[in-house]
Length: 421
Image (cartoon, rainbow, N blue to C red; front, side, top):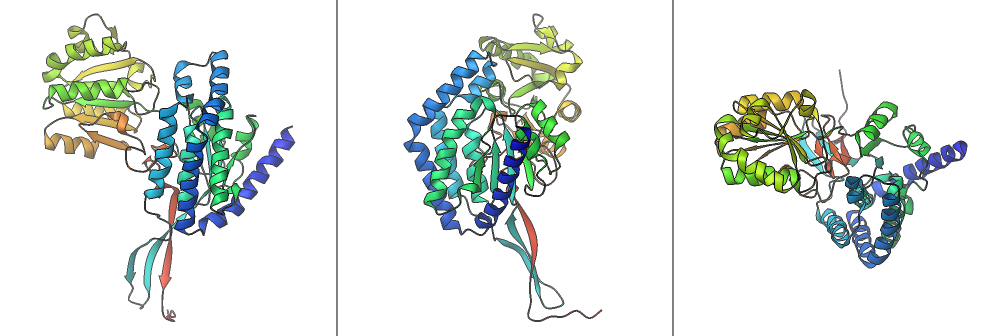
């Protein structure tokens, strides 16, 4: 069986490389036709998608999978509508491929510029969320890349149903079905084989838990775009509007718990703590959130648990929140840069200078001012969707959309110039 999977994955890789030549040269109108056809196919097969998802949901429940993972697995009407909207939004974005920038004449007489080009073949490994199948496919297609999708076993039936919609869209646009390939096995060996296909695959994007991402980073022979943890912060400055601060903090934590952009540590400037902490404790208590606080926090909220050192590093992905009272913006920045994961951090303040300082000095992929951390994703940033979020600094950072799936090459236009040394 192991040899069979190795051969199968090599064939998937070879087909993807061939398809990448076709999609890389496809004109924007053809890619647009494919995207619109995919969106229409998802819309037309809504009942089939929900039926396939029900099979996965029942199996996940029977296996006792944690509720946050089951929540990510669900494909209801709202989730399907969001998938459709994401594809159509990607379709409306400017096509980056072939764009030439920085074109300038050199003293030798020719012009030098940079042309935006696809990366080639992208392998995407993900867990739970079947919407990633269509999000990743639409972004890769629009950016001229072929992709190999390896979804989690818990979403196998849902992913197959969505992949069928993608195949229909590609065929209607006259593009090879192998532009987007879903790995048709739940065997974990397929992941290991995919990570060795450096002859065919140009980049790997893992989306899932820390264990998956660590495995991919450790085993891959191929460059990886990734983030490990989402230890996100909200800092409430003493120049904040209290009502705004409370609303942003509560939404950052409770809108969804099991997402990488959920608030995990709340920092509050000491001069405003008396005013906002009791209200926040009440609101979080109503939502069922357990608070763990520093000593200063527990003086105001004596009934909460003490926050230990490991709590400042924790990505709970659950109704638990660490709370710390700090001296001010400099102390908040120092805490975030020490304990954070360079993912998403927010300041709530009406002081422009402090907000700019926070934006400049916090070393994270997304830094927000007076906005819930839950907005830190590709859809909300206007990218249409995202294949993942990167906390690396090469070659892309933050939500990875169309531009993050491209590179640039130098192009030179001349009129017979030759070089004399």
